[in-house]
Length: 289
Ligand SMILES: [Zn+2]
Image (cartoon, rainbow, N blue to C red):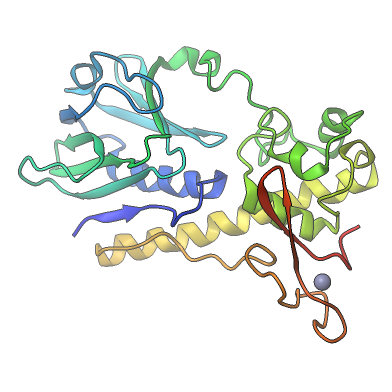
């Protein structure tokens, strides 16, 4: 049975991408790609013309994540840049006769008899090649802000990027130039933990609030990555079919429910849902200011 790393109708954010990358690393690192197949010339953008040819025969040296992007580094100096987009997922299973799954756009077969497929029905994902020593100059990576789990991301650096910004803090944190890898879900979760209203203007966050926000972002991401990691261990042990990891969000998707800091009705109305820039925001109006 193939293992499906996917995100059910939700766009993958940093923790999901990290989990998928670790799954790929466990299966592919050190292996040689004996066969590569592409089934169409483009996803969101055209794929490199000779992609299959350049992948065939290459050994996989390692993986790196940057924001919501994965980089698979190959012997010979190429890196494959993978982005899951909105609907992309990776299928991992034993090699089988040449039958691509519907919407499977790239297939890799390894020298130890495994098969990895990239499936993306809506084709918002992307696959590209970049020289490993120039990864950060790729057009999709060069504008990215700091990695939230790296030491370079601090209350001071976040405060600097938010200074003077008259957009709501929610929108500012979704901007990949401010911090890389966050999306709608984990921004809502981090703002809840930090006790900051998603409506607050970004320019008022530097200082004390940024000091709460940075650890809130880190804790939110680390817990989600840990949940993804335990799902990977299950996969390794059972080698069966597995959906994406179930993760309990504190406010996301919980409209009307009491949050963990409030008693709920009748004392308070519970988690509120509003729409900001066309997307749902969930927050606690009582404890997020
Ligand atoms: Zn509450």
